[in-house]
Image 1 (cartoon, helix red, strand yellow):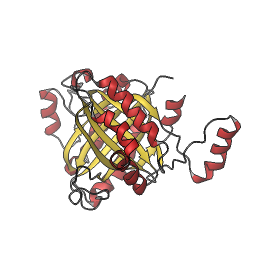
Image 2: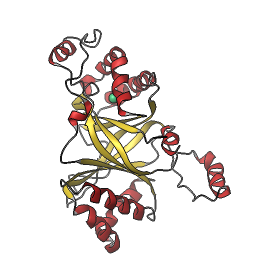
Image 3: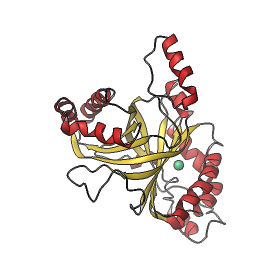
Length: 306
Ligand SMILES: [Fe+2]
């Protein structure tokens, strides 16, 4: 199977109990509508926990800021057989999604903005519950495969999302160097796996960046009367960002493993030498934020591995 594409719908929302209630009542309905499209292979929705305090910024930035960070990030990953499937799903189900999303607009401080990513490298285990561990490890042992990490679903692990922008012409060098860093992380306690995501565009319709008449129609309703004009104002590849942007998605067993593991790129001499090859390609970054994957359909990993 080809590697899936990821649409990452990003917003920063008012950090309050009312926002979580909307996220948990409206979110599942949006997932059900999204599943109308056969190109949809799964989702993983995150709420931000904190910011990795790099560059001497500890104090303002902390690993765990889920009660104090306001606004706080939402990052909704949907996985697609091809990126065109994502735009087609938004177009085909525009009215239902507009009505549902309108119920959440009053908590949004920034966004939505929905970049599209190609997965250029990955090594992620499948998620299992503790009751599945004997079968999972037994199957690996029986077929002579390496034992997979025990990666627990539904909010029980930490996602570290690391933004990098590369110097033009050094993209391939970055992609190789970051895979070497991730491969070295495999020996670090609690490291579960990673994806290197390359930004290839953004979805106008998923970002509600409609043509001007569509924007006015969207603004003149509270959601009960979706715009008749639902065309996005640009084509997805036109939003390809240059210099090239990458998102390095890492998964860790818990907060302490994320903190001590990622820190190795500055406190461990060998890791530093490997990671310095990444730093040498950068125009901006890395900037690392921490997330909790609280709502997910883990079956997309089976597609990723098929
Ligand atoms: Fe979307």
